[in-house]
Image 1 (cartoon, one colour):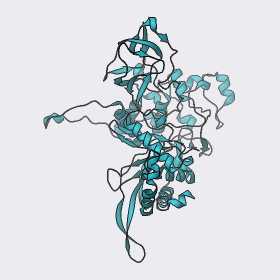
Image 2 (cartoon, one colour; image 1 turned 90 degrees about the horizontal axis):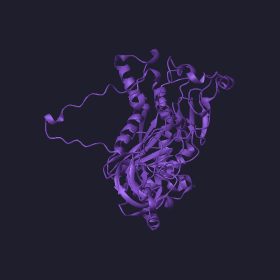
Image 3 (tube, helix red, strand yellow; image 1 turned 90 degrees about the vertical axis):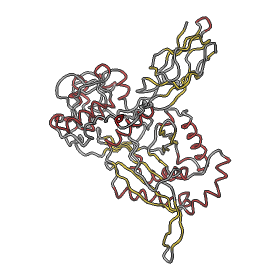
Image 4 (cartoon, one colour; image 1 turned 180 degrees about the vertical axis):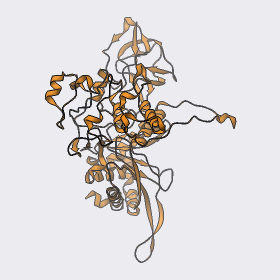
Length: 496
């Protein structure tokens, strides 16, 4: 008898909820055939089989939570053909994410290959002599490996390995500094004791919040430190518990308060959070706490654009899409990022750098029954409006059906969220970290506009731009949003 066990599903994904079992006892399964539909923290995915044969017994049922390595079904050993297990549900080992990469459907961040004196990687396992010879790129000698804040296991080392794509511009002069202004090597130096057990993404959060991770007690498996532990430590410091190393803790939410007993006032019902809803809450809380948000508003006159949409809409319909305002916004945002590259960048405070991406992958927020998902349209600047309309329609359909893969929701440089189909005159969207800007679109309406002689009825589209004030100044945001508005008003000029 051969068991099919749940394989690795991707980085930082350890379990999921069974949505559907796609086979039953007596069915013959082949290699790579989808056998179970699973909702993880990031998406709903179909898991392919790594064995072939006749199913004998199903070990799971819909609604059950299963962990990686759990047995899903067994097959008759006499008729089975075992296939070599593959890493990841997609049939390949997931690419290593840079430290601090989002764990949920948001986008992945790519950073250049570089040696960093504070980070653990395969290179940090070298001897003290090698570390002394190499030093840091800022001219500061590296600490011995035993004193560095390095990963605790092979998985952490893979997470910490930086990726090569993207351009880096060093915005610091002289020694690098921590968010509190102290030299980076000094700020990240441990106080005493062994290396803290924490993933690189958790270490990244600790550095951004300016705390010494070695002073934090872990509540995770095996005493590992989690993001919640770091944030709880900061909240305690702000409420009078002190801060690490005497440094002033940054602004953070106050201590969480227990909920009142709502049942005292009437009947209540409690439902567990879905994996996607929970991960969305964690991701947006992190983005809100880390990013100093500013939102600016403007309006675009889309009277002429509406005439063009009516004229060329049938052409998009024949291609399988719809010529919506969101599709037009995709092209406009991609062109705007080329003109204002800082809006497609990401900030790396640990290295004192801005990461400029030389590609225009734009995410589009899609409202689904399972929650908000953000498929990413790739290489938008290289595609035509009709092609994009068909691609966006297909991605939106997959999102609502829960069929988006993790790869299809990764790699964005900026996000668009359009609530015009529902209503509203404006809102303040939250930046999709590690991006630095998000464009919100509300419902257009007819308004009287003075043309110098008289009022004319014009269709105006409300636009809302939220951005990371660490990277983008208000004047640049105003220029960006005005450029976007003018592109909506003069789409022919954008084509030129």
